[in-house]
Amino acid sequence: MKNLATTLTGSVCVCEAKKLKREVLTLQKEILGLRHPDTVSVMDRILGQIVKFIQTAKGVHTWLEALM
Image (cartoon, rainbow, N blue to C red; front, top):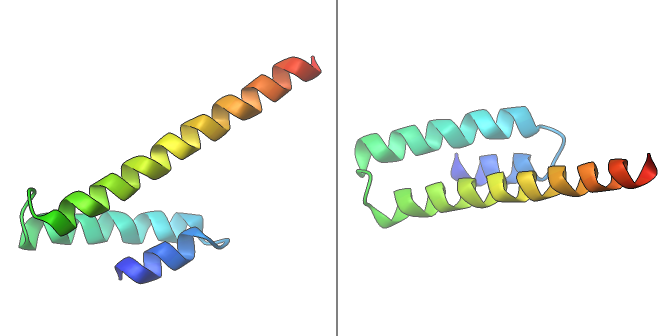
């Protein structure tokens, strides 16, 4: 499931990828625990995507301000 979520992230199915990633994280926390390296790795990747999204949004905002 983790690999499918990663593949979908790079495609048009971003909403489905987000849903799968949340499901993977929930299951990993439940089965492996919050401090397991695999769980931490998934949380780190999700955080990285959030940061990337915020940076992209800031970049778009900057471009829109420049155009006005």
